[in-house]
Length: 474
Image 1 (cartoon, rainbow, N blue to C red):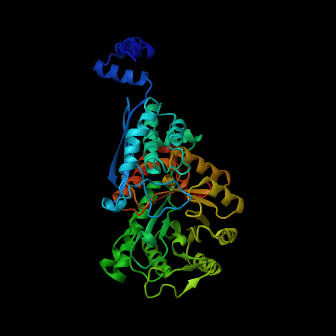
Image 2 (image 1 turned 180 degrees about the horizontal axis):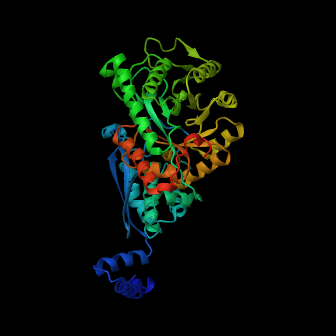
Image 3 (image 1 turned 180 degrees about the vertical axis):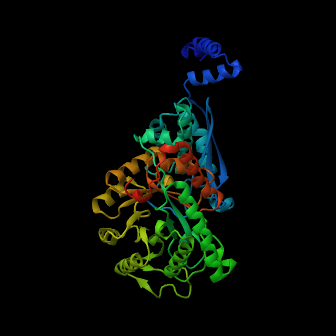
């Protein structure tokens, strides 16, 4: 296309004239800046360039970062990554060369963005999220995004979403709400990790984490304060019992003392809560991730203890009895993955007891087919949404809709491998999920999400609504 053809197509001569006239009417002290801004608004934005690079996530493991360019600016996003991946989730593309980053490099995924995805998206309107995501899905041609890599596709999808918000001149959460057909926003209850175990820490605790939910806070700002204060009181409790070396942290910032049992960890958290004085405002959640210690149909809660492993297996019925006792002894309101990802029978029965929120994580893997089956069988009552498990923002929105249509709650979740990208905070507000799990109230990559929620609450002002007691039914 020649310059003259471009000018004619976009009627730029007329738009320049309009911009000059507007500057004269406004009596602006800086007419060049005024005209420049006026032109930016008058010319529809398109994607002009997509550039990817390999960066390191919070674990020191490579991930994909993308810069997406439009005439409104440059929009950056990076793909999160988990410590485990399942057969039902979208596939990260890694290099597999053991001589470089122990096989975890993502140069192939980066190359796919720079050479294939970029070419397919240049010229597209960044506000058309569905079309952008579908173009990448069509280009990949595999069910689980294994050709281009879910890490490549997701980073572009997130960056495009940010560009779409900028084009509409609205906050990111507002743009996401528009994409999802929502008109209400709310500030989610933060699910703070206090104690880490499982694959996220190097202690003997089999379950993945013990968390708190400040549902009694009046505002999100107060909820963050409660989480921070409880975290530091817990540090003191652990130090008194194990010394300062007991305060090492896991991958998501939770303390990782070498406790002997889940009950010991719960007692520590209970003591910390008591010291804060917020007893009536805080509830407890546990992330079990039982798939990690399920052997056949039995569960080995001592699998991380070399001298105990294999000596005290629990059946599904034993696990149910344990959860009942814990829910009676502690203010537990949520349990994630209480059974193996294929143990549908016990998941269904435990959910039917109505003891607490039962969150499907490994059980669902954010996969629409697994969600639909779980809805039909009443195998859980809450979705743990991890955007990298689906691979695009459009599919994440669809997964949330499936869950909401079944009257489930939704938890927007971090991964163990995170970056300073705060996208998840806007996603939680825009989709009105009611809960966000971003790790402990420490470490920069975790606080990027929690602090962004503070900014959103401030921006919404009198319109800000913290879900609090309505955390499951917002």
